[in-house]
Amino acid sequence: MLLGRAPFSRQGPLSAWVVTWLMIFQRLDGKGTLSAAVRHLLTAPVRELVLWPEGAHTLPLSANTSAYSQARCKLPLEVAEQVSELLFESLQQQQPRTLPGLERPVFLLDGSTILLAYSPELARSYPPPRNQHGASHWPVMRVLVAHDVVSGLAAPPCWGPMDGPQAVSEQGLAKDIMSRLPPGCGAMGDRNFGVFSMAYHATQQNHPVLFRLTEARARKLNGGGIAPPAKTDRAILWSPSREDLRNNPEIPASASVAGRLLAFKVRDAHAKWQKLYFFTTFTLPPEQILRVYGYRWNIETDLRSLKREVRLHMLDVKSPDMAGKELVLGVAAYNLTRAAMNEAASALHLDPRQFSFSMAQDTIQAFLPVFAQARSDEERRKIMQEMLRVFSYSMLPHRHKRRSAPREIWPRPCSFPKRKLANHGGARKSRKGVA
Image (cartoon, rainbow, N blue to C red; front, side, top):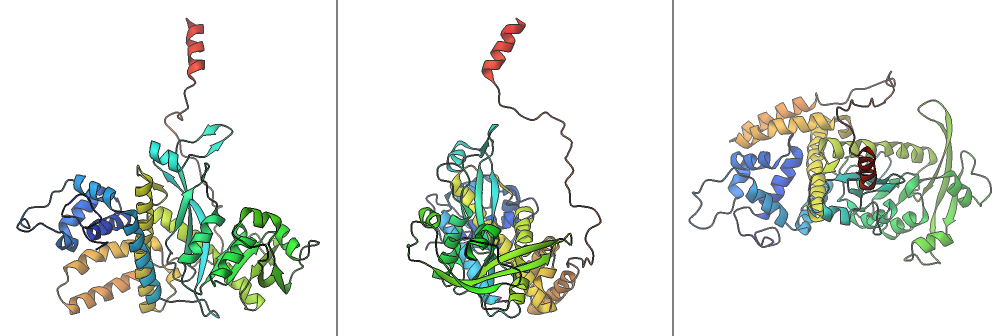
């Protein structure tokens, strides 16, 4: 009932299922326009799901985008969230993968920001950031994601404003996302998450944690004096500070988290020595803890895929409700691509992280129409074999040495001057002086 015609006040042939799929298709398509989605509806098997009134099934479908645009606006955000959550849960259960030596999946936590097109309603809900030069033009949304360290599947995200009186922090969003993770899975984060509130809420949800600590926090957990020396591995009982209790009133003053404090001395990418400090509730040996934390870099490439390949770097919407729908269904589109990559990796006996997300997405888009036209199981089997063969060419290169050139960005030439806020008072004075 929830995913049928009931959520729409506008009666029409486009059900919630059709609208949801077309919005996901927009994220998978190269252009991702409303026009491309409508033309996909006219030519793809999804056309059979159009709900025509009785006796009107012979009417031709219009190629205009107005009906689809209205249906997108009337799709409830709760429906989009349920679709994203159901897809994640089903795909995660079908493809349970763990790191060597671990009996549970581990999720990487990280935050990012998404630009939004300007509208008065969005500017009120997501105030543009400000600095000493004034306010920006673009509203900004803060997003927190959690990705499986092996498969790359993403849990439904949490989001909120980055600025303004209702601004939320990454730690505040992490409290909500803990309840969306599979039961008993682990959570891993960088120094931004290495605070007591994160360890407390994770253990309350039965999630083992591995958080990197700042040197100042490691000193405090070591007794407040010197920083723990390298090769430190000792049991501690982490208690909240007065600031922890003030910023997190839901935590009782008697709360504590039992875990381990670890310290390592390692070489960075430039062969310079650095010290790393961790708090963990895992019972793994220290060397394995350090090796597991090395997988944290995967979240950076996952965020890049979400922003660049699924085009979530900026949402061209006009309302907060539509921004939420585009975000959760964009994550659903990302998960569908990841699921296909995982299936191909299983068939080819490879690590799914060895595939290029961009090339895998190209492969899926090329073979989906061919699958839709197949008429027999034997034909589908042959198409699948050819698809797996093409997938084997979608692997990332094995670089044994670092790039010869530094990863720098050259500024693009600008043909037009930057837009500036008009100073009407100054303009009047200058005109008066000229006169």
